[in-house]
Image (tube, rainbow, N blue to C red):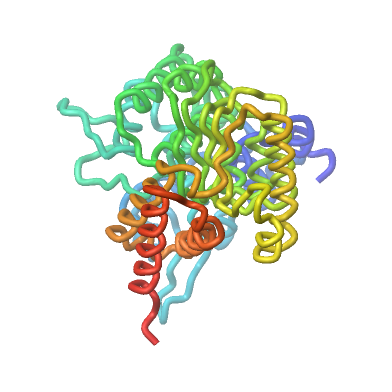
Length: 449
């Protein structure tokens, strides 16, 4: 749209976070489907938001209260409960966000996408929460389901609500709190957060720091908190949190490029060397690796098994580690990356793997002090780790149903078949046990023919 205010703003300040992308989408939707004769292309965002504030808050409240109920479809009565008239929706910008769905003879409505419901719910929350105490208590509930024992709960929170499935919503809230602190929600709010909580970035930093220091976080929760810090994008808050991250284990987490960006964003603030960075079977690929490259050397143990990096990824890994002597052990794909038997491996695994082997051999030539563990025969601890994983899969149906994990099991099995014969003593026993356990697990979970 050329000379529009929003277009100019994006040209000079492109979105840095997912929250900013959705905020720009929201502004553009309102501008081109709501204002028409009420504003021209030079209208600043604050005026755009003020013109639709009432409807935005009604829509946000509908989104928020139903998100906590895991409800994504609404009938006319649901809309009227929040002051939204169906006929008004058809005639305004809301028709681009809340779309009708024909369910037999009843007209239902749903947000264009679940993430839009989460984003509108976050807009409502960021506007409704003012005091730092309310924000921190709300985070305790949204992230961990914890309610404080005092007589009064923070705004938006009541007993009996559920907190599960709010990860994307919380990320959006963090991004929109930053937007409010920077004055980007003017038009929806009359006062900035600074007037209530001048030390909010510090308090948020202390909250995130406490989670990493005092909780035993699951892989998914840990990753979500990293995303929240990236959306918040406050140097002080991230620096405080990074002090508490001694190791980062995202083993078996399927990481997108955006996930990798969040990991990179936070770890760049670590003033110390991580004991371990485990990205095994995280499906990062070369695109994810390009995001992580600048921080891969900032650990002692680096696990990169099972990521199918390909030749481009191998070159990125080489570039990240070649001149950085901090990584002491590198765990890579278990494909027999050794001088001996390379021709057989090339025949078995194809040209791309051969290229990967050559580049990793070159890496070891440049970094002779780096211990590269390329197969199970080299490391008893790695064998035991995978045995523990197989046992974990037996008790976790959701994990086992994932195609990713089934592929990972086959990958481990191929690695054992290529390199396991080199094992001796206890390593050989463990390798045979792992192979038998995987074969048995795959047989137990294969579909009945």
